[in-house]
Length: 262
Image (tube, rainbow, N blue to C red; front, side, top):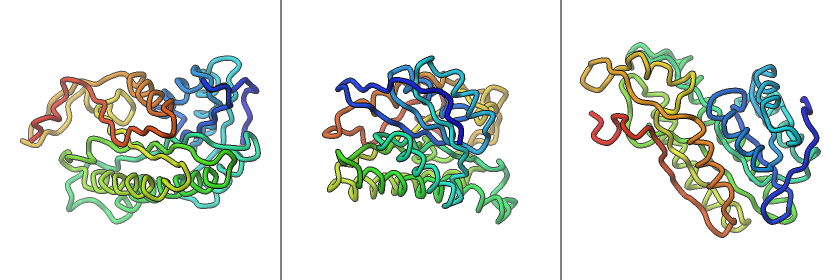
């Protein structure tokens, strides 16, 4: 656990706002962490790579309160330690962006190994559950009670790409997780929504720029969008009062072959 900056967390209502972001060392997680910090949130950065987390913290606006906690979301002890650190450092949690994810090898279904299947399920589904559970416990017990969980789904939560069975199956499951969290959280003022992202420019989507397999068997370059566009969407969802919730949002590169895919 590395404390990077002491700062001034400030929500629009004058009450300190605290967010935890998993997968915060790169890509969408880093972009969202920086956007929240710029907006005055205190941000707890979770991820497996300490150096990458510290780089995210360095990029955060000077004066932001940022805490980096090395976390493997597939390990219950790591997840428990993450939310214990949130409680000890900030006393409460207002937002979890459940973002950590893995695509797995893009191979034909019959070639996908059991180990690779389990690896994707462990990160994308079990990891998301463990983090949501940890956040739920904290949000239920804190005073004032409540908070918000935003799960990173994918447009694969609606339609698959070729050679993506593990990723697609887990993202469909994340939708069920989101719905169950929304229902179970009502009593405690815990809102849960999901953002389904298409072709944000990250390391995971690098193949979009050089050519990626299409449903008709051809390779095609696909448009991408800036991760900052995703981050602004998350900030909007997170800034709503708990009486309002964006249940599902889709943000995608406008010209990507999603509508009409296949």
